[in-house]
Amino acid sequence: MSIQKEIVIYSRTSYTPFVALARDLLLRYQIPFREIDVIVQPEMAARVRDWTGSLSLPTLIIAAPNQDTPLQPPQPLEAGQSPRGLDRGSLISEPNNYQLENWLYQHGFLDKPYKR
Image (cartoon, rainbow, N blue to C red; front, side):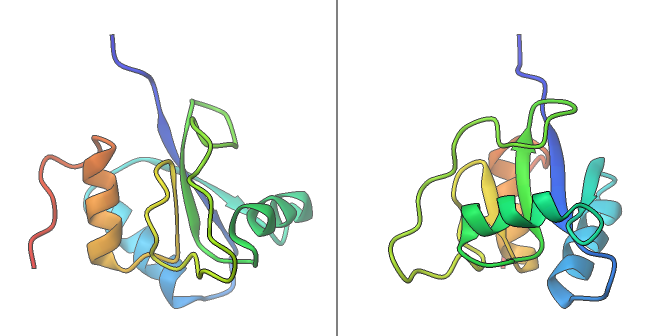
């Protein structure tokens, strides 16, 4: 029996390039996701800061259905390390398309990894 899981995106409605890239990629592959606007829900912005050290948007997580936290705790960041594009297991922040596609593949949302 496989674990039920979903993608949750912490984002904001005002334009940011990485949020637009993530939304576009998920829509292109028809991968369902749930979005949380950190401006509307400031407590969620605090959560992203705790995970990433800043308001790194988008931050995508693999969560149990209807949950807002990662299935497994994300791998920790080293002091001063940028979270941008870093695969932390159940969490990734500000990924480019290559990073996001490979992360989605690792979690079973895509059939094959991205090839450059």
